[in-house]
Structure formats: structure tokens, C-alpha cells
Image (cartoon, rainbow, N blue to C red):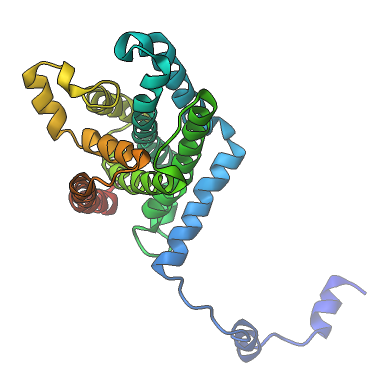
Length: 281
């Protein structure tokens, strides 16, 4: 039997028959903001799985700084490497996490240059979900970095007097601040044209903030004008909170400053990011 005769022998496809097939199943409901954000967050985790090199800054960076500052400068700064480690490790935990947040903007800018986000914006999903999902995925990176720093500190002899509760609370607060700080880098990723530009500007911002703080040394040893700068630095407030919680104290005033800073970061840079994202050509 030829193809022509087969076609002639078959029953014609009517419009009603085709419509009944297309409408046979119930149309799925449109996904909500939480579901779509979690989906894009899972995408960020899958990118880490397929490109594990993304974890180099999470693993090697905090290990290098902890060992270098403890054993090169610990004796000179505190008279004992062990004593200095008790002061340094909470600060290194803060520095490692806030520095890791820069990768959010670099990754987002890379997706923009490849045209991936043009496809995301055409999807019938909640508009901010690709951005929120990317930030949620990076929270896992912050958690991995925190676990590495704390584990290394325990191996070297760091003993938090606040116990496991103090460590968990300090890490939780640190993750909240890091998530909020990431909105700054998402804004920059939508303004600057290349990932290298995002990385360069981010380093120019973060290096002064982390080094002109109380992460490495007590501000009392600094000149008066620099002490004033350190005291208003939000990274200093964050390091003070993390150090206090791990030492067993609860600096309520400092915790309030950290939470206010976190809210301000999202309130300022979140709307700007969304406007830039909506108008991105």
C-alpha cells in the first residue's frame, strides 16, 4: 500500500477531534513566586554540581587567610597564635562570606552576556524569581564556606565558649546579611558590561570594607580617625556580633545594627535592581 492510498484511507482529522485531544487534560496552574524562585535556586545548585570550580573561592580563600594570618601575624599581634585564633576566626568567617557574595554579580552578568536572562524574562513566571533564585542558590555556597572555616578553626584549636548554639546563631545571622548584601552585586551586574568589570568594582568596594574593620585587629590600636571609620563600618558590626555570639554573649544592640543594615541593603538595592532588570535591553 502506498503512502497516498494510506492517507486517503484514513479518517480526516476534524477540528473537534483535535480540540478534544488538546483539552483532554486539566491545564496546570501557573507556578507561584516561591515555587519559581526555588526552581531557579535549584538551577544555581546544579551549576555548582557541573562546574565545581565555582567552589574554589569558598574553600581555598578562607583556608589560606586563616592559616596565613594565624601563623604569620598571630604571635606579633596577640603574643600567641592560639590566643589570636580565638579573636581572628569569627572575623575570617565574616570576611569569607561577604567576599563570596561578589560571585553572585559575576555569575549573573555572565548569564546576561550569554542571553540566558532574555529567555528567563520571556517566561510566564514571577519577574524577580530568576534573581531571587540565584541569590537563594548562593546561600548554599555561604553555608559551605562557613562550615569549612569553622571546621578548620576547630582543628587548629578554636573553642567557641558559646557552644553549638552560639555558632549556629552567628552563622544564621551571617547568612541573612550575606543574602542582603548580594543585592548590591546584582545591581552592579545589570549596570556593568562584563564579568571582569563586576569583579573589579566589587573588589574595590569589599577590600576597604573588610580590611578597615575589626576583623583582624582591635580598633583600639588604630589612629583616632580610623577608629571612627571602623565604628561606622557595617562589616565591623557584623564581626562584633559573630564574635560575641561565639564567645557566649548576646550583643543585642549590635544585632539590631546588623539587622537594620540588612534591611537597608534590600530596601535600597532591591528596587533599583528590579528597575534595571525590567528595562534591560
